[in-house]
Length: 271
Image: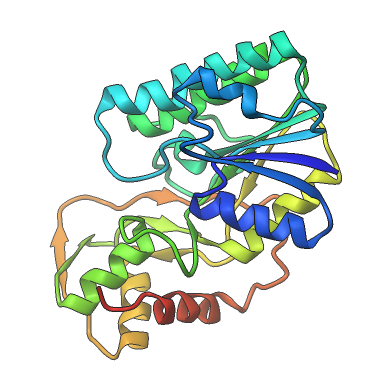
């Protein structure tokens, strides 16, 4: 299959390119400076003959200014949709969205749960989903990812940030119930699941999350055990809530979370 991956230098995008190439697909990976989601002039670099386009580009972390976030995750996706419709879109566009579209919930959500984002990031991803699904003249598959993690991830992301804080002795903020409950998805499982979905195209929304739900306190304690350092906590008022999604595809690795976390901690070297 001829596949284009936009955002191919990112954590998820680069892992996808490597996995898909090993599986024998003809993959074109595009990233800055050759491709920039906020620069429509670079859209022409997307190969015209591809069958599937995976959109992994966009702001996925950190704290960009609101205007930058909006321009990248909403306006640029609109411009890309217009470009693809004008040139002729591929058979399938797969958009890597986020579980943040659900907002903080009171329990595990499913792909049929209502989207109620409570952050500008979550709203921007939901609007991008709606632009693609309602305006693009081809099949669109939405993958809502729940906290991808693994070796090589940027230190600003949640689990690497926890590793850094615990290693340096900085306190971790939690609520009385342990903080936010999440189900992180290991990068190797994520790319395998994404590749499997390419074999069953169709307009759909899928939640991709790990089998293990952990609170921030539980994650910190597990990381501390692997580092041989007892985490320090600052307990704040309120309840942590849930940002965990029932996974639409079984990972087949229900007992492997501790191993996956250990691999991630081991790869997170001292700065």
